[in-house]
Image 1 (cartoon, protein in one colour):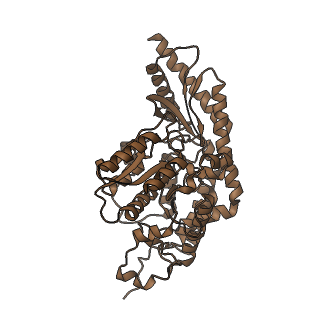
Image 2: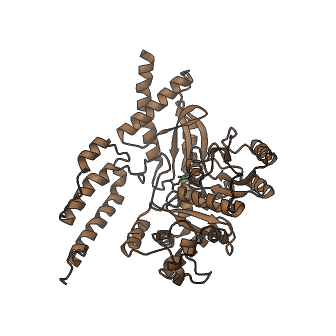
Image 3: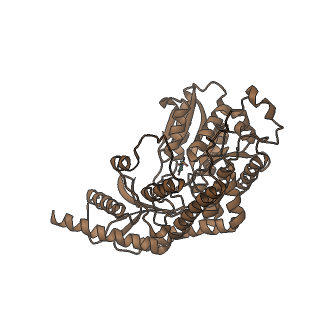
Length: 482
Ligand SMILES: *Cc1c(COP(=O)(O)O)cnc(C)c1O
């Protein structure tokens, strides 16, 4: 047989050239991203015009493909690490982890089973232990797993809760969450095959916290009906307002009622590294399971979520299957096969970026960055309170602040205020100078800033507010004329 030429290879020199081009592009991007636009637009039609084609039968020069991608793909995507990317939950990321990800992918490390990648499994154990300690979970008995993100961590949590609390029959099982819980939780519950009748959405109080009395009533009624309350999902940092549910109270309700206590701290959990956050998150250590998203406020690039559990056996009891082709690599119990602790078999080496960035910067730099973010949001709150144009709708909480344009001299109706603030957001986004969208709080359209980027400065905020102000004056004029 002839030597196979179809090896999907580049020569050593080509690989180096190609690699350096990519590294140069990434470095340049990190160095200049604050000067670029955080917002990208593109209709399906425009994107089709740029990219739609049949799969090419013959290849072309690697550098040409790269050049095209850098020019057309990277520039037509929003920049969530931009210091003026204020909306949703930004992804500030960090360069060390970016390179760690390149390394993990470059070596194509399989992070499923111990015998294939003992060091990869060990680094996941070690970094999970760091997190267990940070969150006050039992270090010996506790466990966890890295996932693609918070959604998958929540799914893993609800599957585990159901396995441990219900076994095989979940026909009477009831799950509780608040109306501020993240949508990924409902998605997880539906994916797992629960019916609508098995989900209880509990209203929140005027601080957007779980209404405890309503929850207690609901659990009691469900018991009287012969149903089986098995899981409660609390939020440690709701996406809307950063609100933390009353964790100690919810923990004691769950304990008394023998209900699995899951906390979704996807974005807010990381605040525990700051003194203020630690205080606010009191009770988080009482959870049976906890979702945190390192690709949010632990500054990791996508994708990285994490589920921590009080008892690591709960994960292995839920996810261990024993197919015959994995027989030879089972190993002993201290050598964890992470495919036995979650849904994925083949897994990328996510722990590496967390490990390398923490080793490089040290925990203290993370603490300082997170504290800075929380302080910055509080400073923005003070600034808004001292202004005649702005109203704080919900105070700075875990680096999130909700506010609206509402000048004291004018007496706009709620409808006009909604219109004005919607217009401001629309025009700011259209300008591409900042990503600042609205949310709805108590039926009011409000502007929301999530300030978890450690490279966002007070100037970024004030300049964005000035921009908002110019658009506000624009729409006020229109209102005055009409
Ligand atoms: C972002 C978020 C999620 C979803 O996490 P992904 O990583 O986007 O899948 C879940 N819960 C909360 C509170 C979040 O902020």
